[in-house]
Image (tube, chains in turn orange, purple):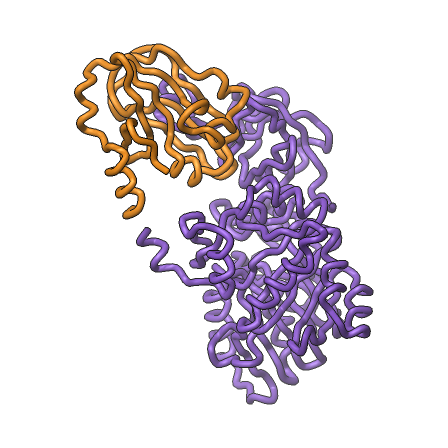
Amino acid sequence: MVPQGLYYTDQHEWIKIEDGVGTVGITDHAQQQLGEVTFVELPENGPVDANAELAVLESSKAASDVYAPMAGEVIEVNEALESQPELVNQQCYTDGWICKIKLSDPDAVSNLMDAAAYEAFITNE
Amino acid sequence: MTSQESCKKSALYDEHIKLVNPSRLAEFAGYLMPLWYSSISAEHAAVREVAGLFDCTHMGVLEFSGTQAENFLNELTTNDVAKLVVGKAQYSYILDESAHVIDDIIVYKISDSKFMVVVNASNAENVIELVGAALSEQSFNSSELLFRDLKSQDANSDARVDIALQGPASIQTLLDIIEDGEFAARVSDLKPFWFTSGYIDGIDTIISRTGYTGASVGYEIYINPQEAGWIWQLILDKGSKYGVVPCGLGARDSLRIEAGLPLYSHELAGEFDISPIEAGYGWAVKFDKPYFVGKEALEKKAASSNMAVERFEFSAARGVRPIRASDAILTEEGENIGSVLSCAKAGERQIALAFVKRNVIDEGQTVGLYYLARNKRQLEQGKKEKVEIGEKLESDILGQKLARYERF
């Protein structure tokens, strides 16, 4: 269920790192908990700290903040989510990505969980 | 998940975990129940178009019997119990002496000397305590007044829990499961707020044409908790050909909001101590009765309040942020007249129940909505996290006032 090769936070974000750029989204576990996402407030391009508020996902039951898994600069946001917020539910690991961050310290990924650790984390939560 | 461990399991818990992953269960009034089975919007639509089945077994079910039962209930509740006839149910309130709402309830007249009273799960203990205190002041013998909690272990074979089947196909589904032709005929003749009893497959049931979804065709079935799983499965089995689906807490909330029905602690009591009159239920309070608990205080409160629960509609199109409790309702000129209590998406609309200055806005007239800041970033962008009535604000979106209630 939890894809290999991505890294995970205890707030249920994932990050996929390629050439120093991290693509960020929320996990399947998170989207299930949230329910049908009806509105996405995307971040603006610019610097962001690790664990800082990045985006807001709103479902019919709750507004939920998405935090930056790692520090860097937001260089691209998934504008498709403005018209299709349901992508966060339907394809949370692919088309439902939220933004891309040019990482200031790619090695900080060692603070995050790998797939096996995250799987164990949600099982015990 | 420690919160899940301290919760009670509803009589239908085993059915729920057959249908959903336990992680989908949420705590409601101390019980673990599914937020949704398929999706909130699909379940909402099913109730409007076909029918939906709801686990209401958490609701409190009380019984008052004896020669003094009617008099006792008439002093305890705001509506007029003396006007009830056998087979009819009545929406009503229990207040305290200061006119705070203790609960909104339905009183069923089973016979001249027996009443069933259905109360909210989260308030059942308070009601039982209040009744106990009232009983201790008056010394009734058991033929005069006997009070029983029909959800307690002691109720045994008399125990009752509530399962609701709501929506246009609910009647056909019920008729399909009732083999006794006379009982079926009585059920199909039920008018709103009437009930009847009979046997389904040898199991004793009470069926009432009541509900909490705004569906004009909808029923609640009162049955022994031991049989709750059986009838739940039977209804889903027989109803599947019509498209009857189980509905979770999410659709229950969106349906009642769309219909304009109040939820205790949101549109009744709660942060604003909302009275039945302010909630729009003055008809369920009979000031012409000589006495009911809280009457004097409620008369004063009603005379001094200029606030009311009103219903508003906003767009739910893509890109429109969902409205939440505490967001502000504005006049077209931008004056804040009150705040949202509950809001839900219903098809292409967001329906908000809000506590606002009464009748400042006419039905059909445009209103504005101001979203309060949801997080630090929005605060930094200048959004306020708290606003006052009378304050001038800029509308984020426009909507309109609707009629107080809607039937479907």
